[in-house]
Image 1: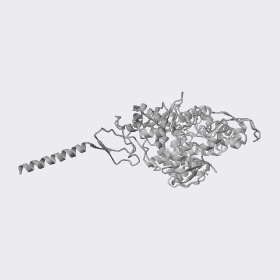
Image 2 (image 1 turned 180 degrees about the vertical axis):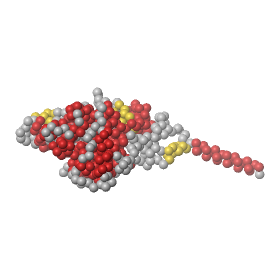
Image 3 (image 1 turned 120 degrees about the horizontal axis):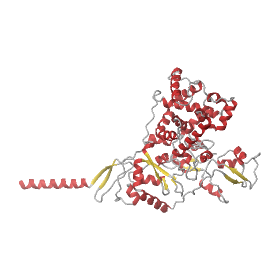
Image 4 (image 1 turned 135 degrees about the horizontal axis):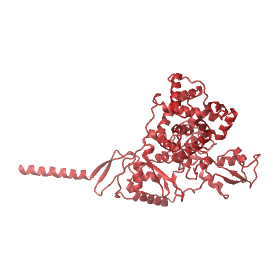
Length: 528
């Protein structure tokens, strides 16, 4: 009996030991939402607890870079990522169109909004007026715009407030350097609805809506790969420089706002036509219609942001803020796809943090400094493994034998030779300029052209000046007229495949009232 008990005890101990050994060799790792990175020893089986389906079968970063799961890299802390709602806000570009439309079409009629009595508004505007350098005194026109925004555009304003929590800290830092009122940060909302890739009908681009020539004057270069007007930091510094120079001319911030929108020349004309008045509200009727609505839109935005709590605005909080990101000087050509693969930072996030790279490629050019902005945790991982990442990117490019677009600096002025079949409208569309501008630059009195004639053009969009007879064919092949939607496509991802095409373009050209797509759909990629 005693012998049987001893045997049973030995068996139980053996089973327990085997179970413990198996448990020791099996390690359960909690998977990050988008990044699954771990270290693996030879005798350990790793399982992921609740892995992200999209990334479940992907290799750890060490295996991706060096084709080995045994490379010992430091664990990457859980990177800050964006949830689906926040990502939608970052990549949604329709706010720009609605903001511009509201400025153009504002009727300034009385708006009934009982939640904001006129007396309350007057008292609040008086407080704002006392602490800002802008003329924020009560005006029936301003009341109409404020109440219109509250009644019809409250949701849009909440989205802009959410985006502002990323951009405003950087804006304030740059504006303070040039001794510019921090309230000027609201100008970027009126200009671009905080969309760094916003492009107006006349070619003004970026958060601060620089025209091509004005951007060049302030050091914002444009090439086939990069448009620095869409770089948040560089364009903000350029805007601060430009605003400071306008203030030296006008000495009045209301007039600075008006001249930023319509140009100093139009403001000077308005001053003359008004008999010498320098008060914006007296000059307003002598300014272009868009500028007449521009300053009220700015002041209304200023009011709504400053009194957001009183009007119960509830913007969402960003998962990434500007000061939780950092930049890396890039020493070799890298694509966003490669960066996503080795860091785990989503491509949409890379596009949001680095909007100036038009083709989702960071080029390497001698004497140029191009930077990559990443969330800080990913920055540390990138720097620690920089050489391995560059080797991986180089090898992948060689394996795929991928032909990259030619790097071309866009000139601020070109000499164009007229070819057979050219006409002013065709040339104007190619370079994003107006027919009247071409005629003015070349002292032309008619629209007639002759083959071989040279024209001076100041292009507003980056177009390589092609030479040779084959340029026409290559242009057609690189710009197909239709695109067939694939699984996982979105209007945003499709627009990024074709430089110069925006989400707004796709919706307009295809008569779309929604962003939803189905695989197999054919989308027009050009007007008509």
